[in-house]
Amino acid sequence: MAPTYNSLMTNAKDYVMIVFGVVIYAIGFCGFILPHEVIIGGLAGVGALVYFATGGLIPVAVTQYACNLILLAMAFKIVGKSFVLRTIFGATAAALSIGVFESLFMRLGHPLIADISMSVILGGILCGMGVGTAFIHNGSTGGTDIIAAMVSKVSNVSIGRTMIIVDMLIVATSILLPFEGTFVERLQVRVPLMVYGWVVTYVISYVTDLLINTNRQAKQFMIFSTKWSEIADRINMEAHRGVTVLDGEGWYSKKEIKILMVWCRKMESVTICRIIKSIDPDAFITQTNVNGVYGKGFDTMRVRMKGIKKN
Image 1 (cartoon, rainbow, N blue to C red):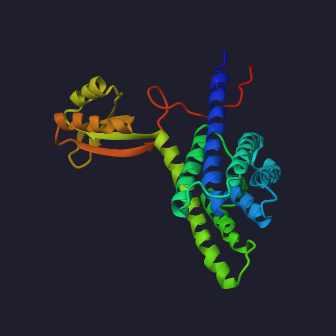
Image 2: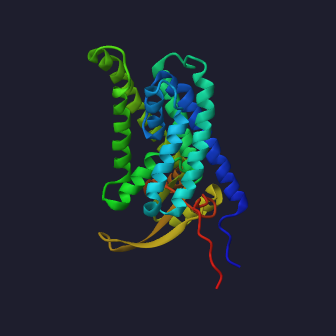
Image 3: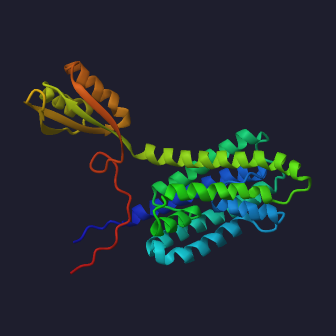
């Protein structure tokens, strides 16, 4: 029997965590960013632009969801059915969450945190945590991800660069929002808000990447020592990590050497170093970060495999 990759339990957990992620995002955006009239990148920013341009007549969630559906319809033939269907779920959950929390927080008539700097930074952290949680579990909330995916399919422009450009333009557009006053007064009010928008967009991106990479981060050791056998045994017994022994040759000395390769969790790296140094203080060691080690004792690949057809 062919292995079943998409077990019911795994899918259920992924969908629950995607919803949890978008709820955190919605709280961060609606509770700490939107009340200060700060425009951020993404379709949430586009929705906020329409919301403030219409005096609150059109909710953020409505504009965000409508734009997502339009972009997905345009991207269907370019990015594929799987991407579109996965994004529809995330976009729907995001729109519903933002709709609920937008109504709740905007009715208060004042921000939860009066200080704009502290409020938008906290909001950005929550948004980044929400997006990162969704991404870890194969989710996507759409937005500028769709535009970037389309551009990357038809040009050599990277996804990251496209998202940065689009997000910066969305934030910059906030200077055109209705304002009662002179042009100079408009600049004095809107420019600081634009700067906050760019900063919080960066915070969201940074926290998202941090959460994704921290979740998968491991360490790789390459160990060169004449006492390689003793080191390998100690790592097996004390650190409970596997060791791969490779054959090598020192080109200068023309002597054969044994190279130990070890992967471990980030928190276990100190234990590995102590074991090595206690046996051979002169051992030559390289230590590198590895963003993703999959297999027994490490992470499980969170990818959705297509069903395997029986012959």
